[in-house]
Amino acid sequence: MVTAGLVGGLGPESTIDYYRRILEAWRLHDSSSSPSLVIESLDVQRALRLVASDRAAFAEYLLGSIRRLAAAGVDFAAITANTAHLVFDELAEQSPVPLISIVEVCAAAARQLRLDRVLLLGTRFTMGAPFYPEVCARCGVTVVVPEDVERIWIHEYYVTELLNGQFRDDSRARFVSLVERWREERGIEGVILGGTELPLLLPGAEISGVPVLDTTALHVAAIVERLRHDDSRSEVSHA
Image 1 (cartoon, rainbow, N blue to C red):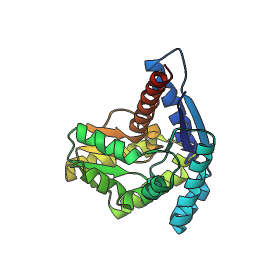
Image 2 (cartoon, helix red, strand yellow):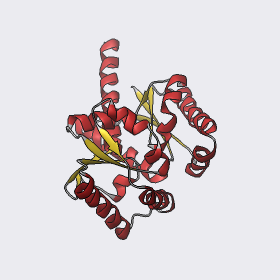
Image 3 (cartoon, one colour):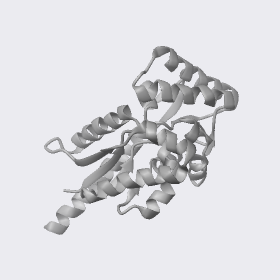
Image 4 (cartoon, one colour):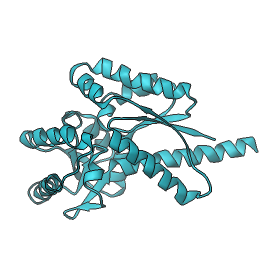
C-alpha cells in the first residue's frame, strides 16, 4: 500500500484535523479500508523561533522531519502548515520523496473558482511573504494582505490562541468583520485561510458572502487523491 507522510505539530490542533479529514475523505471512496499514513510531529514553538531568526535552520529542521518520514517508508509527504512553505522550494529540491504544496493546490482552486482578487490570512510570516502572491499570480489570481495594524493582531491571535487550541467567539467575530470590510471597501472576491488552524475557527464555505479557500481541505483532497491514484497504479503493477 502507498504511504503518505505528514510533517505535523505545526500546530497540534491542525495536525489532528488533517488526520481526521484524511480518514473521512478516504472513507468516501473506500469504507472497507483506511489509508497508510506516517505522522512526524515537530515542536511548533521551536519552529516559530527558527522562522523568525534563522530561515536556513528552519529549513533544515523541516528537512530532518521529511528525511525521517522517508526513512519510515513514505512514498510522498506534505507539510501540514502554511508558514513552512516559506522554504518549500528549498525543501522540494533536497527532499528524498515528492512533496505536495499547499500553496499550489490553493492557487489551482482559486483559478477554478475564477477568483481574481483574494485576501490572505495567516501568520505574519505567511502574510508578509511572496510565496502566495507569486504562485497565485501564475494562475491569474491577485493576492492582497491586511494592513500592517491588522496583521499585528491577526498574528498575535494566531500564536497565542489558535496554536493553543483556543477558538473564541469574539475572535471569530473580529475575523468575520475584517473579511466583510475588505469585501465592501477593497473588492475582494475570496479569502484564503492561509493558516491550517483558521478553518477550525472559521468553518464553512463562505464568510460574509465571500468564498473561502480552506487550505487544509484543499491540501487533504490532494493528499487523498495522490494516495488513491498511486494505490491504483500499485495494484495494476502487481497484477
